[in-house]
Image (tube, rainbow, N blue to C red; front, side, top):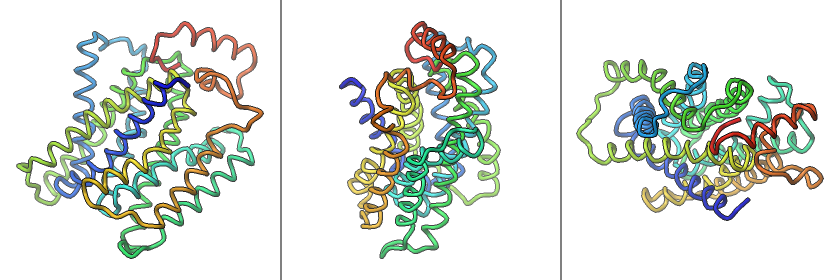
Length: 330
């Protein structure tokens, strides 16, 4: 990895860590359903304007519907779950639980997609579960009645992320690939369409909302445009440049950034259980993501290949990747 790649990982971690801070501001003011919908709406508008300026509205090659469905799983449901969790959990807790997404990917891959489950990955999954249990232990500031539903919502979101990775490979990459910006736009449009009925229901039957508050509006725009639209473009380009496994290492960095933003901006405390649980989750992620010493090496693009590919398919895959434009998901 180049120095600029490490810099982009840090920037992405700072952006996604800040998203948990913004959700702590918007959810109490607008409600979970409204916040989730407005987040993806502003993200879709920003991405639509960007692709419109670049003249990239067309060119989905018959995969636009797939990106819509992917958006429900990769954005709509997770964002809704995290907005619900923001009602109960501090930003640092949600961000730490977000780091269990690769662990969920390992379990879902083994159970549903016939992915090999090695002893190293299995041990990492168990250690990650222990880390989550440590985080879930009631502390002086939070009761089990607040922790458990918040943790359940976060784990539902990370399960969606784990599933979305395999569906992206099946629906997008194995069907010829698609440029990262187009995948990001399609997914946010799909998430917007999915959350729109919830938004309407919340407006008619939910608690009364004071839409004149300025700070929540600033937070929701930042959440949609900066953390979501810009964050997803940066993330998908990292996948194209250094591979998905290395890009997932951003989850190591999100919890400390989220805890830092929560401490600096909201005065949230950092509990001992969170620190210990975060360390266990990080070690678990290292066991899951980082290959053993014998298998280490190779470029980020090579890491995007499927382990079950034959040698001939692998060679053909590499030729296609070299011919693909920068930022294209193959």
